[in-house]
Image (cartoon, rainbow, N blue to C red; front, top):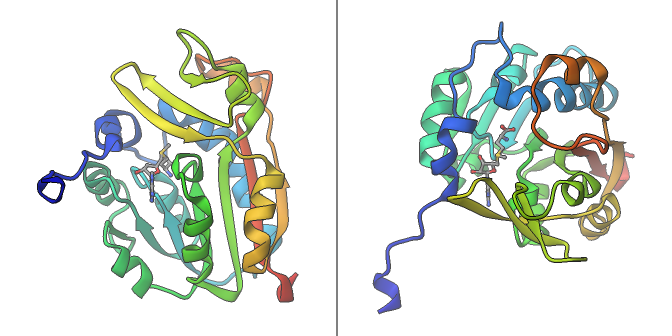
Length: 246
Ligand SMILES: C[S@@+](CC[C@H](N)C(=O)[O-])C[C@H]1O[C@@H](n2cnc3c(N)ncnc32)[C@H](O)[C@@H]1O
């Protein structure tokens, strides 16, 4: 009977060797260099522009993976909750971002930490099919003055790296497909433009307050052996705040 089927394994557990590597902040792990060197400066710039300076904010990092960004948020002085549904990554995140950072796989614990001044989601929304429902839940956890800040795939980057023997498989013209960092772990992924994110956020009263597509830098390309095509920036970074506040 269908009810007796075991729950499908969370495919992100199979990528714990990628996203759950131990990290000390003096080094930049190769696998996360694009995130840390290209995306994080833009996320930090958004925070500086949008949030009150010098205050310890209550922050949720949704889909925190191995906890690297949680640790960075804590180092910036914030009170941090990381929510991560993949159990193996939860364990990595607890090692990389020890208390007082709170790492949880329990939606109830994530909700109990609300209201949040800031919710971040770094490369999580591209893997969520029903983003409308997910955004509604997260908007309900934000303070009225709060900010939602996320990094998603920049669609031209994915299209440029799609095809046979490439990490992304997309049907021609399709806005969803699969990402296979390794052939045996193929995860559905969804390409959404900045305009699509704006359209999903508008009914929730959330208006765009930050927008960036940071390019690959010469320094990054000289330093790291990045295996994909880099003529388009990898990340689409957007911040949203409630209408009344913007
Ligand atoms: C590419 S990894 C990024 C991890 C981390 N944010 C980082 O920047 O390294 C994608 C993450 O999204 C998480 N994720 C996927 N679907 C999710 C969902 N429905 N709710 C919360 N997290 C989800 C995965 O478990 C995984 O940790």
